[in-house]
Image (cartoon, rainbow, N blue to C red; front, side):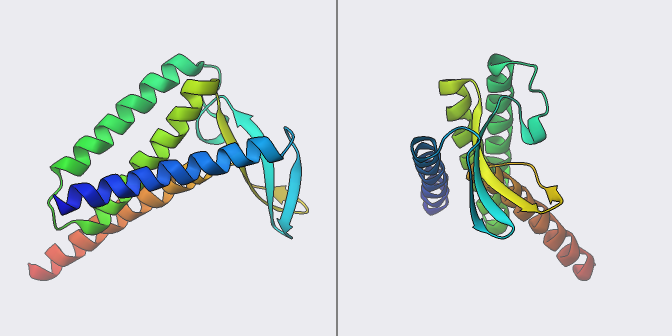
Length: 158
């Protein structure tokens, strides 16, 4: 029961913080406005009709909503199916699910995802993304880390 409540708290917190930031950025900034926070980091409000790096932007919101629901369902199944002692993976799954739900809310309400983080240098800039995207990426990294740690521990045991 503790595992479920911790995961739901993580998912809920991720969604709440993600949506609060998106609402704040939408209300405080004009579309494509840039606010430099550090020499290499800015807030830049934009809308992404696709997924990461604007891939699949021509698909439209409907198919991407279905895809997001399918991926969220699959990751939820992975989480429920994984052993209780895989704490790092469980936290990763919760971040992935929370991030996916945050972006799914945007896509369902607006037909696009609100993005606002921009890392840049004078001659280069990274894709604009949001907290939900970062949670998905960090979550995936944690799941991979957990798999590597498990693999290493089983190799040492053999």
